Image 1 (cartoon, rainbow, N blue to C red):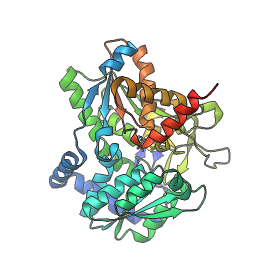
Image 2: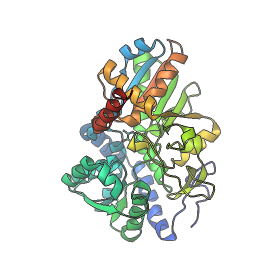
Image 3: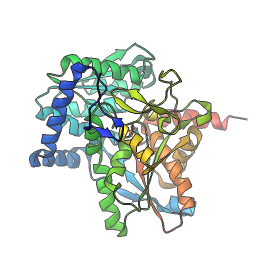
Length: 399
Ligand SMILES: *Cc1c(COP(=O)(O)O)cnc(C)c1O
């Protein structure tokens, strides 16, 4: 085990805490990434994929009726839900698939919890003619049966993980183990701005298209920058993608919203920045939910995509430096925000994104009518319909 010295560090966070056998593969990836990003031809190829396949740029939508109803700031939604496959995750997988092709790899490895990243990887693998192998916990496969079928339809091979809690963190370990033995012909596609260096930087670069577009769209439509940005934080990729291009704009405040689950005091949540401590998990040093002995704690959230016990290392640093404020929104507030957006704007958001919305609603009433808030609508809620109906039915039938 070792950490890098300066490369891949965000303050004291980040680095590379992996078995010696993975260092060469990570070095190879880092070099390929650097040279591809400096290559005009690669960049225009990526640009074309994002435009023609993913459907970018996504709109910046002024939610006027909702803003009027809230009586505060103007809310604008960055519509990542309109991307192909319904979320921001494909911005990352499209780029990593292209990188794999440039590196001469013919196979993609991915891990998935809710199945969203697995679907996004299987999708680009089909598009690029690459093999795809997805590791998924047995428990998650049961809960996310539709996504399992979708990945199979796309031609991916699914490997059931039966170790540990049979969920995302166990699938991550298995995917890394696969890569140790297969890096000569395979690329491990990580789904968030987490993991060992260079993944946090690589995923941030690929997701920063969100913030670059939002910045331009804001300037074009309003002639100024927004006052605040709000995004939900699981591993942290949609949030860092929105925030990063604005980090030097001192007037722009930023809020990362974690899954508060049943409430922070209940212990049943996934708020690693709000309620965790620094430690090492999945190859990086960052905040994580752990007990006094350093054992990783089980997590809970209404949204499967936020249900991860750690967070990308750059967010740990942005928290400590105070540049970004991190808060948590609980299950019931997220559900209420989801229903409210659906009924006032005709947009059904993912339960993950609904956490950002719930916080933005509060913020809108605190800031004046002249303020402008951009909320990252990371994904659409079609995948959550069953869960939303189950929860609202149980609310209605409650005494
Ligand atoms: C996966 C997912 C998230 C959480 O992942 P980040 O890396 O934190 O962005 C948020 N929203 C949606 C719709 C997702 O699918």
